[in-house]
Length: 345
Ligand code: NAD
Ligand code: UDP
Image (cartoon, helix red, strand yellow):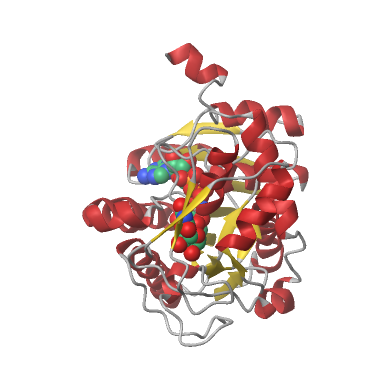
């Protein structure tokens, strides 16, 4: 299949691109490189032997999308492109409504007019907000607690409404829990700009000496060790979930929503200890007050994805930390020293 990967140069999209090529599909990356580097294409080519096409463009740019859709017939799109920082979404909500909601709207119009009727969308467990009970299944109430999460829910609803109006659409909404880790080669991984917001990239930067210590946001939650509990999922398991969704859902009209998680929760301290084992060194941390907006604990009920998509996460927390560490130590500055950045510097 010819597959359009919006945001395909990013952390998750670049790994999905590798897996799609390995599965014999033909992905084309469409990305404005606002949070990624063109160097990922070299890395994908080195890993797979196939150089995916990278079209630099914005999902809000209808003319650019039309140009691409006219020359390349796509069977499906996987829509990763968007902004994802919770704190930034609170400070600049209109940016998030513009990039995520408006951008998705423009993309969907362009796909629809070009006759593409199959999409897999990167949603987030953030749409659930603070849960009443865990684990969370797909029927749990959605009441996102921040702007980022609300934009994801608006896009989910936009896709549901579209599928009602145009019943030939096949829409798969994937709600990611906490993706971490990297490609096992250490060649592709997460490259946050500025101080990482997320736990594992932050720990990795402390371990490699870029930052003095991890700040643990609260140790007084009602959890076994007092620190927050999340469902961390290896990013390679997550991208395999996309392949499974494409296989099972392509050509099946209607909307399906799936949690992509492991079904297991780990605390901040458990993650820190697993990373210390992976890196073979101790990692400094200090405990600080809770981060505003954080919830105590949640993890997925991934049974529906197992049943419908025949997909399960198989990698352990130790695998996640081992691969995150390999990526970090082999690329201490991310893609910063990669050839494309050197050429344009
Ligand atoms: P990322 O920032 O690494 O990748 C997103 C990519 O989209 C980047 O390459 C960026 O340059 C591109 N992009 C952003 N706005 C664009 C636009 N207007 N037009 C074209 N390209 C644009 O993020 P990621 O971690 O790979 O996340 C991918 C998707 O998964 C996002 O939609 C994110 O909200 C969602 N998600 C991520 C997580 C996570 O923890 N990483 C969790 C849940 C959901
Ligand atoms: N966390 C932390 N220190 C950090 C970043 C995160 O203690 O520097 C905690 C956070 O409070 C939460 C967990 O790690 O309990 C996961 O946070 P992250 O931002 O990675 O993902 P979230 O679940 O908030 O999307």
